[in-house]
Image (cartoon, rainbow, N blue to C red; front, side, top):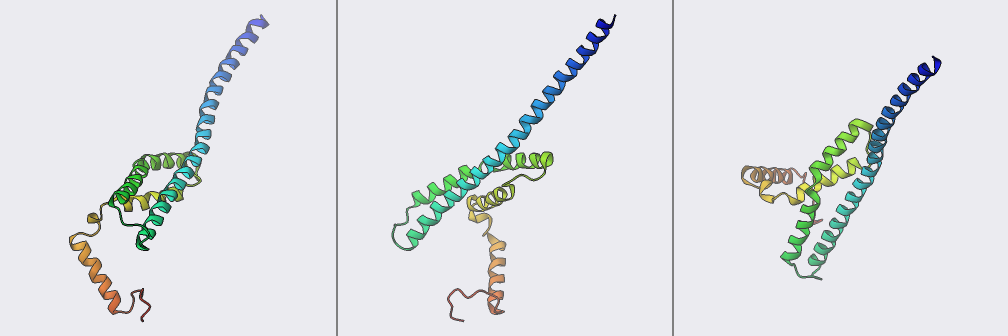
Length: 157
């Protein structure tokens, strides 16, 4: 009977429709997460820039002798940088995943730049200025100065 055939066809189409809607919901959720994540990156960039502004303003005032140097404030600023830096590796993994899925991710380059900068800030100086590495930097700076390649910060040359 034609009703049975039509009903079987309608059931097949309803099943396909249901499966497609599940795929669409998943893809839609991923696409929305992509846009939300770009906003999240922008928030992180702005937060990093705010921390840096606080750091720079405080240090400038200390240099101008408007404030006395306070190790507790310096450590507090460093702690905020560390808190900001802590999730960077996971966030960068998400950025890479979204780049694979969608291509360009707005704010990704700026975020990665802030992560590199934060890494340099939170990394103990001993990792950069220890032993042979420090001697090599010193020797290179002396050679540049002797060759006239060093930037004259005093303005006497």
